[in-house]
Length: 251
Image 1 (cartoon, rainbow, N blue to C red):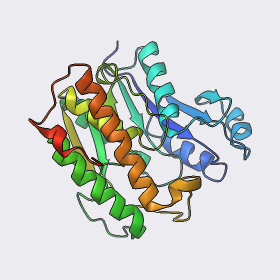
Image 2 (spheres, rainbow, N blue to C red):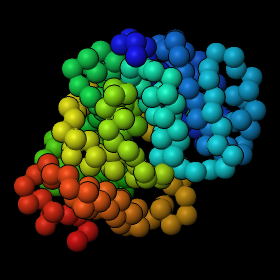
Image 3 (cartoon, helix red, strand yellow):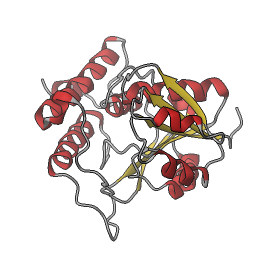
């Protein structure tokens, strides 16, 4: 595995309006780019075929955000990359920050963006329910796992591929980052956060069906956290915080 070989990954589902602009910017800061098209039906797949400067893996149907990232992680491990950077394709991340994430990864296993570590001029006002859910889940994860996160959900991250090999992510949906935190804490991985601007370009985006309801979404997130936690305990892993199981969210 070559230490300086990194891959920037974009999980994509129905992003025909943004995909070229985002990829053009990403390519300025990353030599190797992989798009996982998670069953797009809006013409995104056709647009991706027009590009020769990226790699594309396509899911036949929509499998979920977590499934798209799992496909990317498996590809990176198979192809011998040292690091993976994940960037969303909705225009809410700034690709010029990719080198900073990779530099920070020299001293960590996971570098996670945080929209709440620092205020930037021009920051968006986050949708109220999304901010509330993020605050609740972040606080509960910190208590359960002994972490000090400020943003549990930011999709702008960098990972050492050797660290990803230890995590065995299973969750296919939007709660995949929460399972990741549980597994990372049990593996005692080194996690740091980097501040990123808070950018919301389209506050009307849907999570899909019932998950658009904040309480339903919160229940789903908590169920994934607890299921991952209990699975690791059953497998004999030592909890990262003594007696933390009694505090398991949703119980």
